Image (cartoon, rainbow over all chains, first blue to last red; front, top):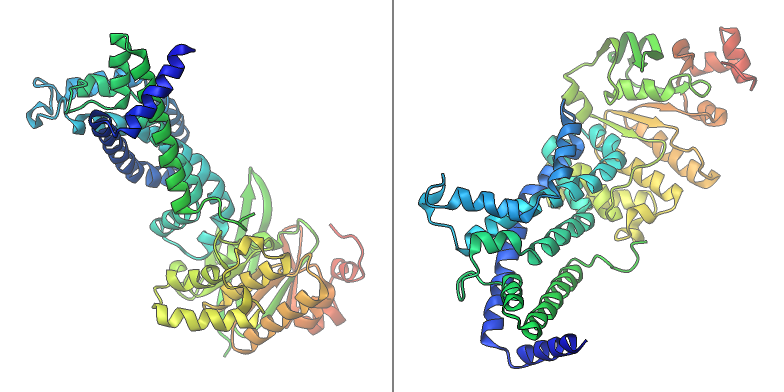
Length: 234
Length: 236
C-alpha cells in the first residue's frame, strides 16, 4: 500500500514539475503508438470491411486465422521483427533496429489483426443490414466499402481504440526491437520495466499511473472529437 | 408498338435444392403499372428480386433491353422493410445521386424538392433510422424516385402502414407512373391493387397462374384459384 501511495506521489510530482525525461518518453510513447495506430488502421479497416462483404473460397479459414492472430504473442513478434531487421536479416540494410521505426513496425504487426477482426465483426452486421440496398443501387465494391466504413465509423473507432490500448501498453516486442535506449527508444512501458528491475517501485508506479492517464486522455479526446456519444442517436 | 422492358424465360430459382420460383415465363411491357398478387410464399418477392437482378436465377434467362449494369442504373427497388442508411434524412436522399456522380449544386435542390414531397422538409437533419415506419417508407420511396428510374420495383411498400401514409405513398406512385416510370409492385391489399393496377400478375406456387389487364383479372378471373383468391379464400 505504501508503494502505491509513493507511486501516486511520484506521478503527481513528475507531472507537476513537467519532468524532462517523463515528457520525452511520454511523447515517444504517443509518437510510436499513434503512428502504429494510423498505419494499422489504414490496413485493417478496409481489410476487415472487405472481408465482411467479399465471398471467396477460403473466407472462413481467413477469418479464423485473423481471429487467431489477435492473440499473437508480442515477444514472438518482437523476436521475428528483430531477426528481420538485424544486420544479417533481409531488411538489415535499412538500419532500423533499435529505432522508433522498428518499434512502430512491431506494433503494427501486433495490432493490425486486432483492429481488422473487430472491424470485420462490426461490418458483418452492417453489411447484413445494407446488403440488399447497396446491391440494388448497383454500387461498386469500392463504394460499398466506403459506405460501410463511413456509416460504421463509430464501431470502427472502437476497433481503433482497442488497437491503441494494446499498442500503448505493449512492452515485450518494443523492448526487443527498440532496446529501451535512453533518449532514443525508451517509452513508458519499457521505462516501467526498467525501474521495476532496478527496484524503484515508486517511480515505476508513477510512470504506470501516467501511462493509464495517457491512455484515458487519448480515448476521451478521440471520443469527444468524433462525438460518439452525441445526444439523440438512440 | 409496345416495347418489352423485362422478360423471363423458363426462369427457376432454387434454394437448398427446393424450387421457390418457376419455371416462369413473363414479359413486362412499357407503360404499365403491374401489381403482383398471390398468397404468402407464392414467390412474389423472389420474382421482384429476380427481375431487378439482386437474386440469381438457378435456370432460365432474364432478358433486358440493355446490359444488366446499365439496366439496374435505370431501376430502383423499395423493400418491404425500408433500409435506412445510418445517416440523416438529407444524406439518405443525396446518397443515390452521389453514387451517380451528380454535382453538389444539382443534388441539394432535388433533396429539398423530395423532402418537401414526403413532408420531411423540416426533418432533413434527423437521423433516418429514428423516423417512424411511415416516414421511413416514404423516405425509401423518395430515395428511389430521386434517381428518376425507368422501372421501379416495390415489395409491399404499404405493409403495416396506416391509411394516411398509404394514401401519400399511393399518390407518389400514381404521379411517378403518370410521368412514365414503369412500376412493378407486390401487395396483399386487394383495395390497393384495384386502385393502382393496370396489369395483374397472379402467382401461385411459384408460377404465373394468370397475367392480364387488371379489369379483366378482377372482373372475370380465368382460373378457379384466382376466383378463390379474390373471394378471400385460402389458396396454396
